[in-house]
Length: 396
Ligand SMILES: Cc1ncc(COP(=O)(O)O)c(C=O)c1O
Image (cartoon, rainbow, N blue to C red):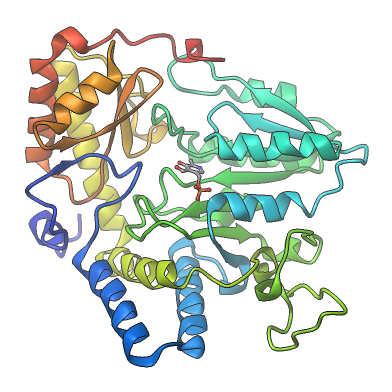
């Protein structure tokens, strides 16, 4: 870890610490002082000046530039959207699913939105093929091999599963990209459950599209998402879901034609989410200034420590144990997940649950004290803990 990273200094950015043992970054990251100040500044500016259009458009470009820096891409390859969902919807609207190539291969790691949006294309001729999980929170590559063929237009995968924290490794993403490209399909990667805790390089992973949003590990706020689209692909995709901020010339105000931007801005729509841009820009600055390498190392350290402590205490977990196969989220089976989340909350430990599992999402502001309090509270509630079920058993 770079000598410059000090977990206590990083924690000092977050006023909810140490009152809360916050393990819910997979739902919403903690509010940093800098983000609060940015939002207060926005409101002060509204009172002072009313409108500041030029400044607000500048904020949109600022977030775009920071996202590009974070992902190691060009700013022109980044769309700033109102949510991850709206980016995906714009992307979907650029396809003609009435053609021979109408299949969308969707992994069972997906968050509902990134499966539902593809199922919604069934009304336009799309056909969705699901790729099931194997055991232990993994999706074997063979499952993709069986699903992808010449009829596949899109392969949609999530880097980290929001339910249990299992991860598709970088090598597997590259292998799936190769399979998709060999068959003439595009690979869409949902990185929402990991971006902000690790260096993600869509180009190195060879993905065509990468989506996410700012409210979780990017320490921003709700109402904003991003979508990377590989530069060489942009001109081939003309979204039918569009708007005035997606046009080549924002000032043209043309009502007789739609002329999409030559950049990934073509996947945007209406008025940008100005307050969310301002807040998220501050969150991104905190991440970039701290350094993703340092953040990633701290996240790996605390998650490793939590998994080791759980093993020592004989408490089963659902996510894979190997670092390369998991994200910042760990999951613990529970017989009463809602009751367990409530009881942890009564001790100031904030978690969430999905599908009979407690989810603990770690960020670089979590430390060994958080791990100790969490594991000790779980030990106090052994009666509510479950056994690690077969990963594939849940729902699919
Ligand atoms: C993995 C993943 N993808 C997509 C989404 C949905 O994002 P949005 O609400 O911005 O559309 C979420 C939200 O929690 C998520 O965790």
